[in-house]
Image (tube, rainbow, N blue to C red; front, side, top):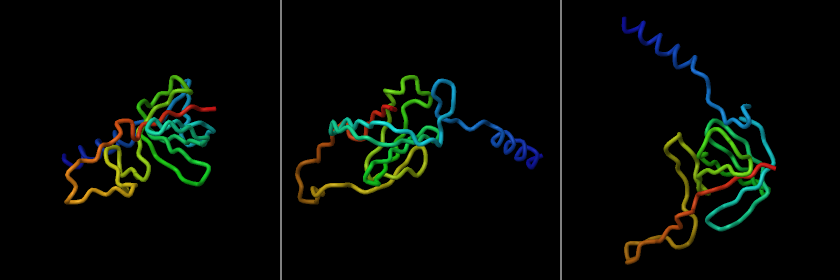
Length: 130
């Protein structure tokens, strides 16, 4: 009986449809599209390419760097206003965790009496498809 439940559970999991990023009712997963990316923390606007996968977007910069961000919404209603969160140097492990490096020369030390202030907009991106 345990094996039967295990097989049925596995079949249900395998038969569930994969969720994809949708725009106008069509999946746009896997396509590399020209876009502009706005980084809220710095106010920088970058000409980039972006590809989508499930609820993530990978932003490809002209210098060869890239960043993965978690999208706020899986269904895109406005191609000029796609928001997500991801920090430079962070690599996603799964839907909840990422690992990476901290950039900057101001490393906190045991003798520091002040806590480092972080920018509340750090990691917030807005993508606008061309």
